[in-house]
Length: 134
Image (cartoon, rainbow, N blue to C red; front, side):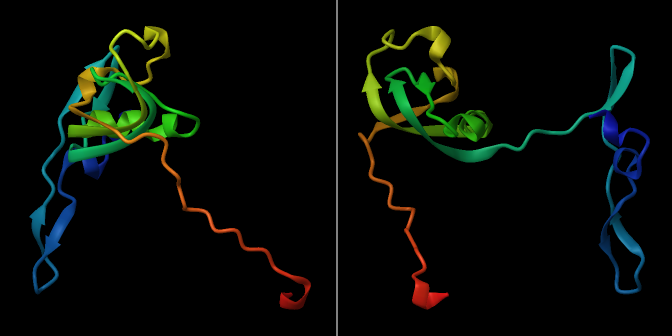
């Protein structure tokens, strides 16, 4: 990101731990910077999780996934950040049955596919106030 260039975050020295007397015992190291297209950027390491659990409406046995509605927002990013990605799919099809242009997440990011069928989500609880409760 170019936002952190020439700041204490990029240059290092930000306090990580203080001693009993209030002095800095451990300070942050400087971050690596590089120039791309004439602009300097601070390089940040990606967050990597051990496991990523995602839910897809449609998937094939190769791990290609199609997400439904708002599941398209974060599921692909979560799957890409996991060392092992486990995909729960409502409908499982054979490889080649999904149009390649419709795939939201390629199978290269998915290590396990679990076919669960259509799940009844009981998350929402309807609460309606009556006239007496107001």
